[in-house]
Length: 377
Image (cartoon, rainbow, N blue to C red):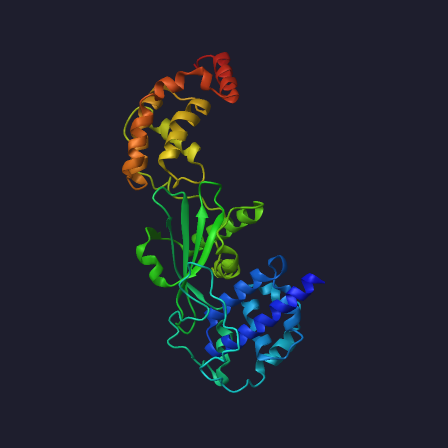
């Protein structure tokens, strides 16, 4: 009973917010609102709102259904499509006054950190912008934002998080915006934050242009991982933006899922030394599918722990490893603090690689097998 009453309260609040959104006539504001609304429903689902709205024949209910359907096609399944079309074609009420009644609840702000607000403008060209006959055609723009570009890069100096960014604009050329997702690299590559931002958000970022299909695929992959990790540590801003960001990523044609990171394939600075190829192949094995994450702590983990414990290297590869790591560090931004750690932790590498007390059981077994096989002819 308590859950049902809570849903009723949330629905009444949504109706009050919808009245205000009908005054603004902004598809982006409405989609942001719908995304937060979906997150506020029981167990993060919008279905209770859809069921309630299908019983109403009001403009507020029409807006709610249209906005939710724009973000998730499944939300349109419970209600009759013909009935929705009929209600969408009804003549709307007269255009409301620009000023909002003080007794009505204004839409909540979007997730913290987003500069595009449910009650603010994102290039719409004014507070009230009637689009089409009766000012209702603007609802038809929801879910139709088209991708214009994409960027991908490190969110911090050492790549512990990556930023995947898609830019969009509606068919009428208004309300350009970015769908931004923070992807954790240090703990597996899941989505840890998501916001909708203004285009100027790009100004201070160190990201590079990328294929929208590739970026969309990485966003979808990251959210799949987040969903698979129980209790994944995500930012407070992520749930409210989840639905709209996923809808934006899914709108990109043919997203490239599970695509390898090109950080390794674009590396062209391998030193011309004996054993360099072997050393680099071992480094690639260590960095795995998160090659952009290269911090002082990760250098220490690689040189003082992982290599002695797991890797079997020739003397030439051990000797070449410091120069290979210097070149790799330059490839990832030439951070002085990372280079200093490479220098410091490389000094005792030959001794560490020869210390059998550091070897893992798997390495011991492999070495025994190699000794048993003897030298190759």
